[in-house]
Length: 361
Ligand code: TRP
Image (cartoon, rainbow, N blue to C red; front, side, top):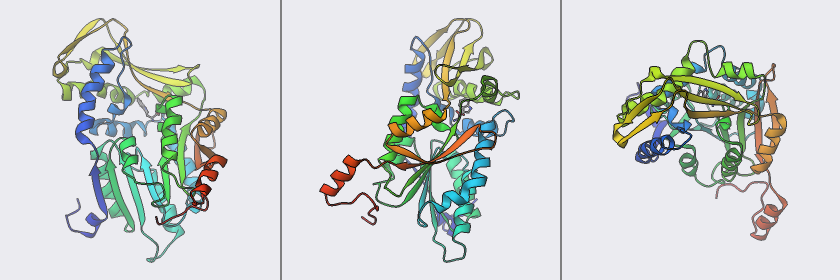
């Protein structure tokens, strides 16, 4: 606990963007998703306070190799990554969670510029779990005396918009954990293009991406023997029960994770055990489920090297460096904005050179 007015408290600020809108969105999204012929629930609602804790537990399961593979790469490459960006860089993290992996980068940044005259490092974690941000932000400023945390409780889009113009400060944007895989491929490119628009020429995006591999390994990663992922998935129904006065019997929805080769994605669903009717009182609806009927909750797209290069190109980015873990399960890519000739010409016409980046405006 940090007392108000202490030095740590001054280095940690938490801003909630659009809280009410998110709550209203949940009701609207549940209604919309469950009244469709192919029932679905948008995955971002998996991460309430409880879901975020369960997700942390998923990351510790032996089958869920993603976290460890990414950590392995960060351990090996953090120094190299820190050396690629200017000293006064702000680290922005999309979907920061507990920011456990980010510590590896903080350590690298601080050991790059040791001593008390080293500049403060600004960290802007963006996450939809306010509880997670509050807990991890406090811990971080206690652990790192030269770290300044400006947390944004927001969805990606609103959080990015709150960052301000691309020229404002040199940045390293982190998007770890293969969260890109939870977007359909075309949506991933659109989202990355919107990130790219916030990047100045010297800014970089560091993205973790899970790679295509054997279906057995992939399916196990999303259906661990201890049943944590199943609980995480069912928490979506529990959340409807809690927040929207729903009557889902969690025992009667089975967790399913299935690799879909053509899409290149693990598809997650909750499958009705037997035919049943379920009321959601706050929405004034009653749903009918056939035996075996699925609610689609999440897709986790996997990438080949070629798919990754195409994704970058479609987003106006280029892969500057790609690192993999020893077993080649996971990739960490450093992406740079691709400056097209047309953009260079337009910038020159306005009298602003594109590179080197103009700062301090
Ligand atoms: N980004 C993570 C992934 O795709 C999220 C995740 C892991 C997840 N396990 C899950 C999402 C289970 C829903 C259900 O790997």
